[in-house]
Image (cartoon, rainbow, N blue to C red; front, side, top):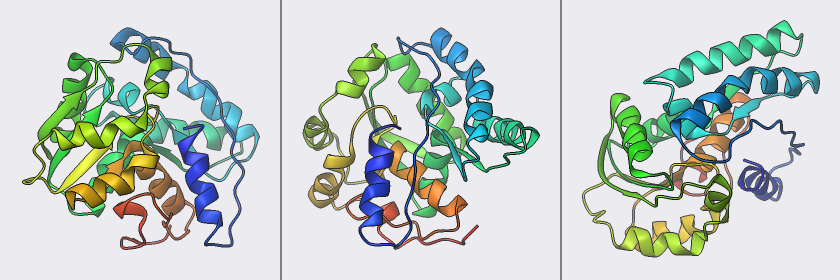
Length: 238
């Protein structure tokens, strides 16, 4: 959230007139497991309240797996609850989550069968797959990188991603989820993987930016950030 999303907004500033400020509140987590994820999610109300003090125009809940670990469809409940928290603080703002944004982003591009790369351990990756499939998609191929330490997830070299995808059969999929995690860097690899596979590439971070721009009523376009942000899917402005 704190690296790639600002990077994408800066890229957008090169081609559009709008300018952005970026504010963050942190939920604590050190190890990516179900117990710490649940404790992390419990802090989300505090974070929404703190950010609404700044009267921001849109809020993004970054951790995809924290949402998905709470049960099928939880992103809708979370976004509604956190949005109410901003309204109760007289700082009403729309809330998007990376979990909900990824699901909606896949719908926007018309994908049904997907290949997915996730940094999580296998049990959490299977949980993410179940969540996505419950939303109407089929995860045909997937790769769990099994990185348990949250800091190491953020340090994963995105230059490894094209090789990881190259080892996956992608001919029969409609789209590739290059990073099912906002924490795992992927932006530098998106264009390369799209060129190598001929498939649209979506990431949790790119989908979150798309959802944020849509919520702001702005053109959801960012150069070099993949098919979803190419300008081919403008959608309806909020």
